[in-house]
Image (tube, rainbow, N blue to C red; front, side, top):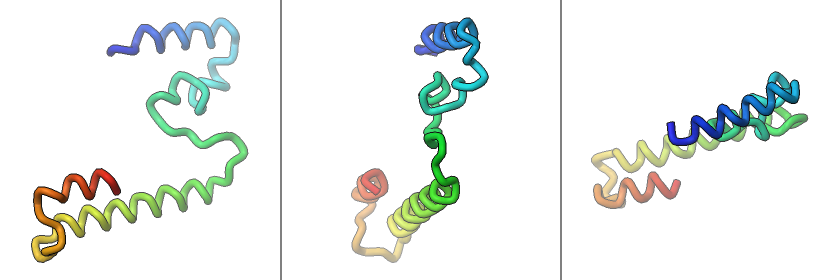
Length: 85
């Protein structure tokens, strides 16, 4: 809600220029503040592999920190390790 007025103003400028449909959901459009859109002409398989590996490593860190038999990670340190991962 804090940025709604600015985003609506940006959308109105894009509509007035006639470029709303082509730039709204790109990394340079107003929707780029809510999502990380890949740049044009990037290999989508590389983007998929990047997301899969990032989420896989983060999942491993979360599972490793939440494991009650893991004595190397004290409970107070688990949020810090997950956050830095």
